[in-house]
Length: 386
Ligand code: HEM
Image (tube, rainbow, N blue to C red):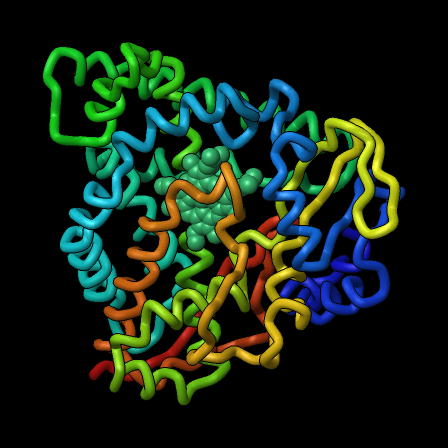
């Protein structure tokens, strides 16, 4: 978006988003050819009403549930829910903890880049293990999932074609990879997510091989970079407001609340796209069938109409905290319980073992180049070990 055109603005977009919300809560941006919706109530409505605000996209988006509407979405999501259960997620806790401890052991000395040493490998390893992929394939997993979420270098047609080709190539390679894993599981079922997906059944309906592969690819695209950013954004707050480090170390029970407030205050996904299926009014603006709408969760999360108590303050005591950082309605993030668990454990381990975490060089921070994602590519810190 044109207002977020510099590094400094991408590192702190929220003031600008708040300004836009106050000036014109619903506006058309001719340069991007889409509507921007900023107010809490309107974002909530766009996400809630999947009949008027559709998630479907062109074929390049891949055939996954994120880009489907009911009834196909409902059917897929219900089947997947049978395998991706709260219990299956909670059972991962000890493993997530030991991965986090190992990563911190490996970061020698008293400095590290939080992104590359800790926040990136953690979710990649967790998802690779959840899918039952062998450890030696992790590097390949990481580069595939990077390509899936990479955005075009600029707005030119050429850049879009290039990124699409790269994405299609990665999807092709991943599909071939998962076809092999599916064959192996068909012969030798395991206690893992892919086996559970293969046996999930509702009224005699099962997921096809293609559905399972698309779903696995979606998990990589939806679950890795977002969780990396949740962890890094959490560390960012801890260094921006250092008294939180001692407070949370003394009261680790507050960490889940801290994670919720990080999600509200620095959401990994700041914007969610939809397409209007019919002419509709939002605010007093007339939107036409077929128009694209961007719902700015990053603006809604700081709307004083919903968060009456100092929305621009990071408040560890905030309760309730109805942020929309995992979306809302039928597409509400399927991985939210896993992301919350990973965020909680990652921050618990950091706060238990480290103190005096400080950002070492603010001027070198590189924001992620995407209007939909809020996060940094690097976050170098120094610290003391406890
Ligand atoms: C959907 C955010 C982590 C899997 C979504 C949506 C959001 C979101 C905003 C809704 C998109 C829409 O309405 O169009 C996040 C954030 C995460 C996170 C902020 C981390 C902090 C994960 C993880 C996984 C995951 C760890 C899985 C391993 C999914 C899936 C969907 C989804 C499968 C599609 C659900 C559907 O279409 O019904 N996520 N996500 N996410 N997320 Fe996440």
